Length: 381
Image 1 (tube, rainbow, N blue to C red):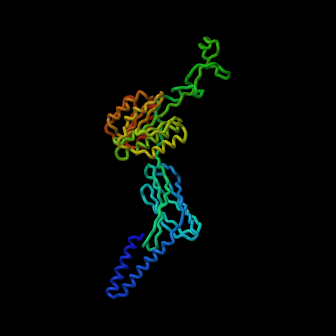
Image 2 (cartoon, one colour):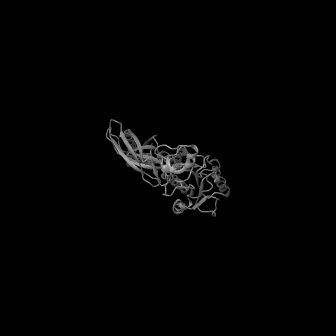
Image 3 (cartoon, rainbow, N blue to C red):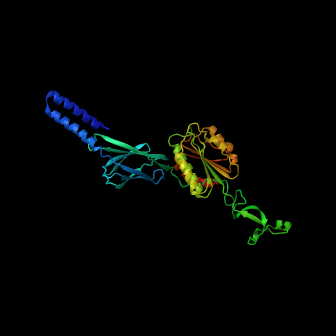
């Protein structure tokens, strides 16, 4: 394909050639011939196009916003002759990044690395890669696209904060089950004495009644489940408030996992990561938060009505922007169904609404939330 410069040279060649012949100026004809010859040489130059394969690796494939990430291109000349240098263009998050590819001997390889900007959270597609080859004067060029694409997930930044308040101490209270581990101080049931039981646990009234030793079966209670909900409706948010809300949710999820609680992540738009303790569950939650976005038509906090638990001991943490009063009423309605409810309102405040029986935190940014939560969340427990 001829470039803008090439078109200009072709126009000059034609104009000077015609003018030289018409006016009888051989010098103009010589210049026109030189211009035409340069176009022919440029076309011949492109006959030797790079015949290469290129693979791309992203390091790492998941980062936190602001952390460094790199793409490494491995270029291999698969021709039986030397390939000329070329210029590659990568599409990275909607932007074009130029990468210079070196000349390579037959069968030779080279690696080129370039940084990937990660200023904001998101799931970014990298590619396709376009290899452009042009003559030294850039009169003509050819390009071909390599279809391979890669994905970089940029997760939200996380603040070190205490976990959600649960409404009680997980060491002393909470529901128990037959599968709960022994050794706690929560009473589950009476059972028959077996060798090795602590004699101090013998329940003498039952022993006398049943005429066999009965002991208190104490267990470690089941950990409360933490349900963290992100409001993904568009109406409550202005400016960067949604990004701050996502960071707050990520911080609560990570804190819950760090402290050993089963954590469920849900959005009001219907996305969900089931309860879990391990790294796989945490990665799934952070990947969801990397991709989430506010949407029109999302029910907002009204969706909490469909999230009430079927078992006791669930602590709710809902994060939103500055919702309307009707949305806050949805929190009041579900409050009795949870062991504890925490509501975080992000952004420039529209008054200071409260929800009866719930811990309400107002914060303009995620940093402000982290400071207030760290200083005051302990008292809420």
